[in-house]
Image (cartoon, rainbow, N blue to C red; front, top):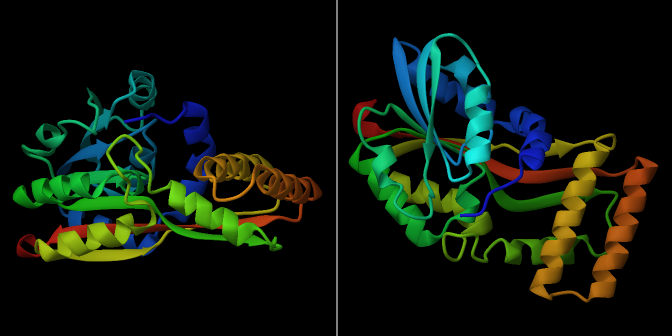
Length: 269
């Protein structure tokens, strides 16, 4: 499993926080409202953004197992004190390998953010079967679903977006990735395993003034499109130059589609 830089995770966190679906967050909060404590496992925790986003919606006393393969990100995640009654435990594991052990035991909630679109169908089957075996609720946020909208439009936007979505299907360390179909695939699997699922969009809204985020995304999309070889290098370079000019002029706005869901075993409701 490859890691993301702390700088990128820091840049995207405020967009993630604003994007998280309120209806889905409310479903999580309602489920755990009467509990005195909650034990959470956060897979691919990065720098701990899910703790910061979700902790206010859970009972005051919380214990989090923060799981990641990057020791630097784990150290950053555990170094940020949230509240006196919240305990953060670092669990260094490569999630592309044996992750089942961290999902067992007395765990009340499994959380995942910005991960499922990177995993394979085989990995998702293993994960779904494991959480269902323990009847564990799952809160999965910010799964990319392939939707992008840039305004004003450019003639090559659709071709670039299609190339990016094709790139999303390549191996990200877990085997061929599910990419934009990941959220729907996960919801279907969990419902088939006896879960009730609340879900909704959690799109990034990126304004014309958000220039750093725009430039990072545009560069990443151009690089992904180039790797697919679906467009010529000159077409990609020209598209990127036009888009960077729009950023400099302060006229570009962007929307990037994501999905959140909260899956609860029906028998435990």
